[in-house]
Length: 511
Image 1: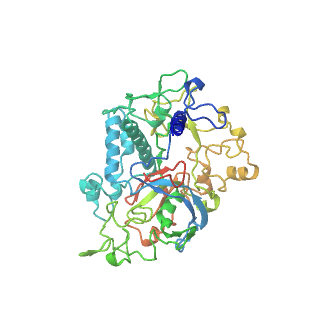
Image 2 (image 1 turned 180 degrees about the vertical axis):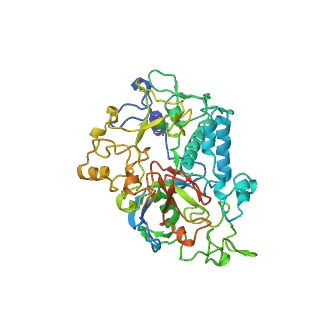
Image 3 (image 1 turned 90 degrees about the vertical axis):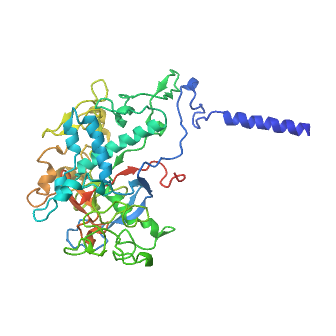
């Protein structure tokens, strides 16, 4: 018995010592997180945190494109099977209240010295005006009156929606650092000391550190949070057209094993726009215009209870838990519009609109920031405190475009689209110069599509998806697609943000 007790004690000690041993590299046998070995750090990590307002959209394959008859005869959404990776998407459209928070923050930080930055962010409330309708109350009240705070923001162009996503990324990552006790809250940020994720990762802004991270290198000391720590969330952004369409259908609700039992016309089952459930029988599934002059039905029995937009949590969510993926407002997506995108784009994570960039650096390799950069029309492009970016170029040796096989120039919006440069690339795979200046008024796509003559298609034409409060049911089919210049806005286009899912497409557990 004494012998057995001794063996048990010895075994317990071995287990304790074994559990205290540091993790070793399986390829070199050197210990991780050991300053004596150089201090290579490996942090504990489970899975990506779900950002505020987001839901996980588990990816997969689906048939993207036309699901209804092509009543416009444009042939711009030919059906094609593609695969979309898992990603996150806002549960609702961005609300007036959310955008007012953005305006308020922008006003506090830039309103005094850089009013143009605030002006750039302001929605166009005049989109409500109609020459033959009395819509002035919406001009005055829709954005700011608390009665509309939970309604989707409109009057936002594509550029403003993208800027909102960038702002949201920084505010969420700043909150995470404060929550984790790493940074101290800055109650009155200015244009010189507000938090920006890229600036922080570049080591150009540290803020007021509360609890610094210990540096495991032999030099010791403290360090900033790095991408390798897994603390920062990926960027908020607009969804791609494929992501939006995939999420809108919500086919995860019609899947048994690897088989989709029923394809959908709308984000719900069936071919009707009214709820077939006995409890809600006959109620509208979305906010849309039923017929000429019928925006909401008869008094006493309003069919969708929305003369214009409705609160973002109205109606029933689809099987991903996303609200208003049909009706209410149409939504901006990332893609540049081309009629034959379905034929040209890749079948994995399809997207047209890539302009490959890298961070601007000076002659010493230090990233450039803290300056205001204007375009040729005197519009602010880069605002103070943000890292500046440039297109990759064959003229810059460090960009290594001569050695690349997957791309040869920065702007790939027109790749394989019929213009002279993309035809050359498809035949030879080599380009000796940049295809064109994307900021030029004489870009090749404008010549190819006869911009302002026979079409409104150019490199600034962005896709928007889904029906709106003033559209017929046809446009609520997720496969339909339309476009608008990225600098324009309307009273029926809003947006919601998305975020890339890193790691496992299904997750290791529920957060």
